[in-house]
Amino acid sequence: SRKNGVRWIIPTKGSSQRNQPIANFPRIRNPKNKTYLTTIGTDTAKELIYRRYEISDPGPGYCHYPVSDNYDELFFAQATAEKRVKRYSHGVPYYVWDAGKRRNEVLDCRVGNVAMIRILQSRFGLTLKEHIQPKEQNQPVPIQRKPARESRFSRRSI
Image 1 (cartoon, one colour):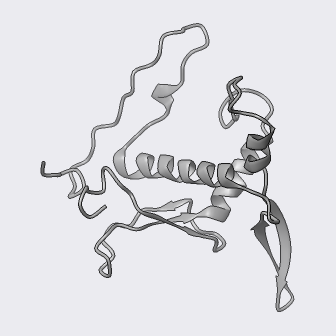
Image 2 (cartoon, one colour):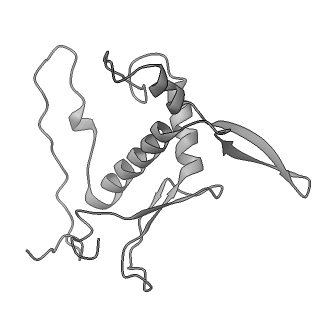
């Protein structure tokens, strides 16, 4: 990421601490390795994803899956592999996400995707409302972005 710049590669690290934002994109470089290491609040992202699994009517937040051989029973087993489990520390209850030795790569990819969308929205001005396709039209909607504000991230030498 140091070589290619923050607009091409965003290094991430998961954090399972409670009440972390889904994506915490830093404003300054990490002095140790000179990168913009983004911390992903995995617990917060998983709570959001599981709440969206409960939405049964198509619309905002609904999870759309195309009819395809790629979305089989194994895919959905991995997407829902983790359970929220109550634990206690010194008599104080808290929750953790536990996969219970089940594979959960699909859920981890969804967490990463949610974090990247949040970064694109907050740092680079991406809006998703322009990408929603009206039901009566079959034409794809062109991608539009807000004008990027002038910052050191937008000035990239080629």
